[in-house]
Amino acid sequence: MNDNDAERQQYHELCAYSLTHRDPAFLHQHVVDAFAAQRADERTKPITLTFALVGLYLHVEKNQTGKQVQRVHMLLAAHRKNWPRFDLPVARGDVTVSDVMRAPAGPDRDALIDKWCASVWAAYRASHDQVAELIQTELA
Image (cartoon, rainbow, N blue to C red; front, side, top):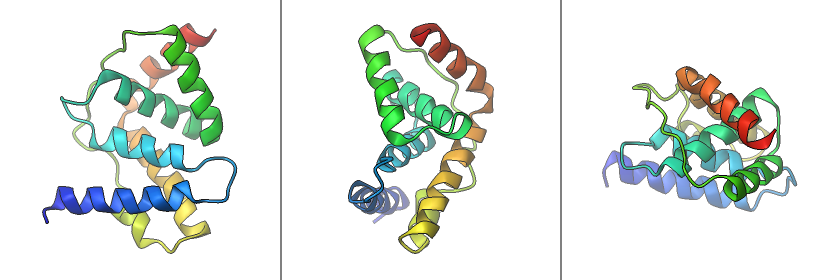
């Protein structure tokens, strides 16, 4: 098993954890967004990275829940069909899915998911204005 396979396995384990989480805020959305933005490459569909960055922006900057992020994703999908491209930073944050999975399940892991989101969002600092403008333009 190579590093990418091991990371993807950890991501699937984290998804199982977040999908069965009892918190109605829907923590799973933040897991999906952080992983998608952190692992994006030139083959990633523009909608995937756009939704991931929108989700991270709303969670980190606007303190929105996964449920709230999902609603915004649905509104964006209803309004727009052409998605912007974002520059991919070389470094994608100091926290990884592996770090999150090393934390014990419960409040410690949940807090690390938030830290992961903040770390990935910070790595995309060059795209912050573009993401905020997209939301403002599409949902105003």
